[in-house]
Picture 1 (cartoon, rainbow, N blue to C red):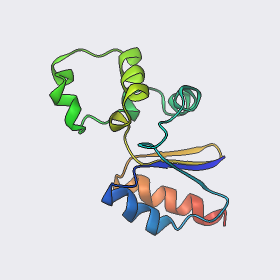
Picture 2: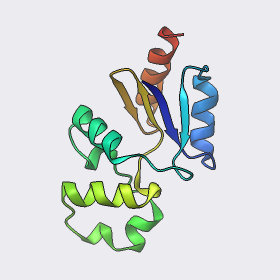
Picture 3: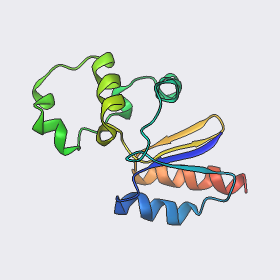
Picture 4: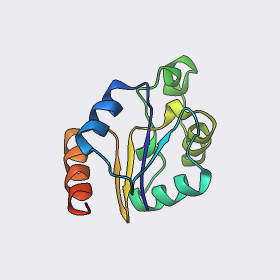
Length: 119
């Protein structure tokens, strides 16, 4: 599977997509229009080790809902991400069995290399 979960209104996601220049074999999914499925989220979690690693603590709602003051379980992280797209780190980039999460420079560079070798 080659898929990128992104937020079209996010300038950082737009910049990363422009750098990646995904070809027609890559499916783009705007998480605001269609959130990630539970099956895909669970599959990614198995690859990276935890739901917390996929959760964006930068989301405005994280503090707004007082989640920063709570001791969230893995199941809590999962449920919040499935209920509200804003809690997903973005973008999620999947190239076969390789997963790249978020916009950290090292992750974006690794994704660029991965997608480039498969074009």
